[in-house]
Image (cartoon, rainbow, N blue to C red; front, side):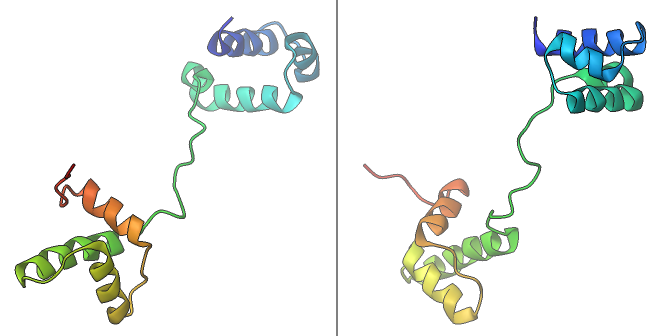
Length: 122
């Protein structure tokens, strides 16, 4: 039985058959807290509440801020236009001179690659 089907059966057992959450937890071998989570989801969004949800976090607090990413891309263009070295180490140095937070050199390369500003070479 898939998780979605099990969630539906648990919900029907509690809502329509009148099982208590404790009895349903024992019968379906899940925690009592999970039964209450399913009941709350069902109450708020009926059938859609029983669908499986991603466990991936909504945000990543360690992600490089978009302001820094944008400045890295700007510096790459400015340095290349001035005929200067526009590599990750140079960009890190310029960011440090500006007083901005300086990510690791590998992070700068990652930002440049994701913006397709680096030509891969063998």
